[in-house]
Image (cartoon, rainbow, N blue to C red; front, side):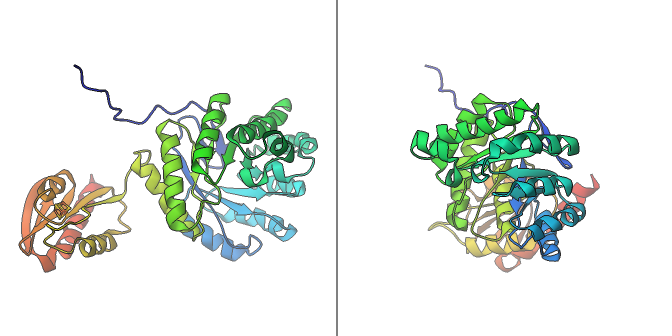
Length: 367
Ligand code: SF4
């Protein structure tokens, strides 16, 4: 009897055509990128640029800004010029803002065809302007604003309805020889969303922007997004992701990056491997893990730090990590690269780990 074969890696990436969103390539063999969206009034240029700077610092690679008014449209060129990362204008209802965003030098424009009346008639002009400026278009289909014709045909926003809407809109652009497109088909139900993206992935080669729409407050939205993106990314589907949370956008970026790091689609930064604690714990693991995390947050180098409550799994995990502690008898054995470098009293564990982490970081940076 042979051993059952168990997958040990995620599926090969789906081959999509590559587009260029400003300085960030999306699709093809480009790394999966993380996006977010500002919550400021776009017309408030200072506040918007401030938030974009915060998002950039937290690891956001592409940012989207809403454009519901003429004042917002007027702000786009300054924002696009001064932002450190590519800016995508998000347009619903008013096609005139699509042209304004293209003219303003936005890195891409997201259009929601379901929200633009007689969209089909506008495609020729949009394709022409976008082509002239080299501006990609995201066709952003959303369950909450699905084209009425498709809602009537399918009765509700099924995966088939979302995909048909997206591919129909893409075909309108294709008629004008415009293929500088990425697509999203968002739904608030991860099961529907996963199926929609699977179908879409099989039927076109456009890069795909993953999103669970209206995912909810941070806890629920994080889990919904992690489950949905995790399933799709494991199948090789997805070229850029946006986690939607009813929480500050910096949180979306942290979650997005953590999802990619969890699947090794992005180099891991600081990773704390801490045990959940149990009746054997000889130290307050939660407190220790929190203090170590707080002390090391912001370190740029990838570092795996094990914080273990007792000697059952402690030495093993601590040895596997770059750095670790296994606690017991009011003391902590400190491991660096698999070797016990010292044993310190419990009160000195955190500062010793931080000290050793700094030394390791210096060595890594010098190497
Ligand atoms: Fe419990 Fe020790 Fe495992 Fe932590 S390392 S969960 S304290 S057995």
